[in-house]
Length: 88
Image (tube, rainbow, N blue to C red; front, side):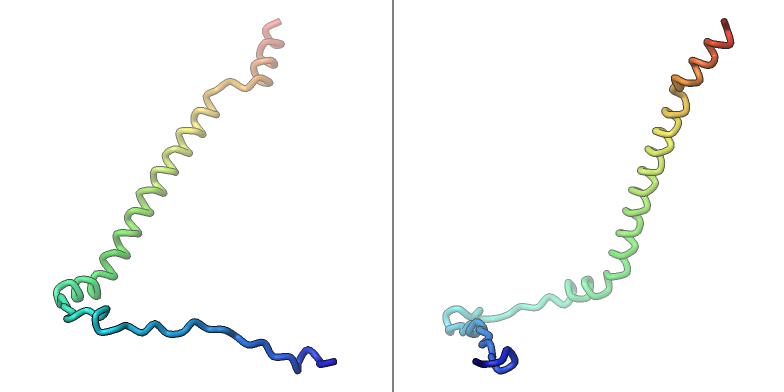
């Protein structure tokens, strides 16, 4: 009987895809302006994401404040019961 360390598993990998000449593009065009915009736009996109997250956070905070005010304004049944008892 073989020990578990002696057993070796064969790992199967996919064969590399070979492109024929008809599958390959004839010419690759490269737009340097788009490349520059992509490379220099990281900071701009990061700032934009932060602004969007900040506006969402402000909106959630506002909704929470409104919800809290609604909870405070609604009469609590226990306190109204105590107020009624004092009137008697």
